[in-house]
Length: 232
Image (tube, rainbow, N blue to C red; front, side):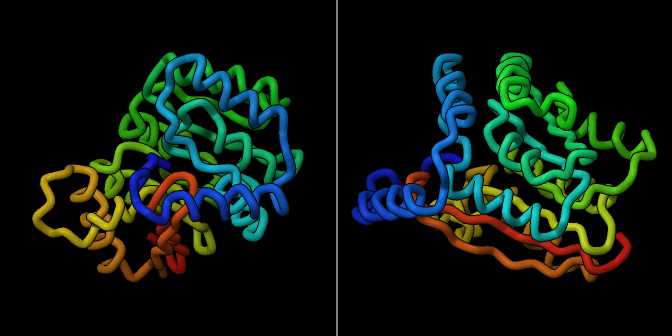
């Protein structure tokens, strides 16, 4: 999740609450902390989800008893580790990353987490790899997390539907954009991408969805949660 609203007067309180809840409910984890250090050392942008959000994603994946997880946007593998830990021993995850440097860092972090046998890091454009996954004839995914370039999220979401089944849960990150999502005249392609996604979901009878606004160390943003309720 990209850091937004860092100068908002409430940001200090949001961050303090995150620190408190993480100290109470999210246990310290050397592997995850190491993944963040490796990302920083590699000069990667600090746009990973927060620890509280990582725990949130893991709990969601566990709640739907996910055996097969798809992630669009790997970065350093931080959220991939959270999600892969929700899988049973025979579960599998595919995560897609377009940047070779990011994919290499992620592969190292996933290996250090002991999850290489469960996580398949696919290097390339998601719009190339998602059709490949469909052509492979693999079983549908139970859980999809979309956290990549926002101008393409309508297309990512459509592919997620094709690769899912009734009961699958699709999560899209960074959908509030510091409140700019309500600005129909925005020239930001990320804002317009989110708005196009909302139009797509609103007209699709095969999903039930909502958006939850979030504040915290990452600023002001939000997640869209979409439950697949019928055949795409």
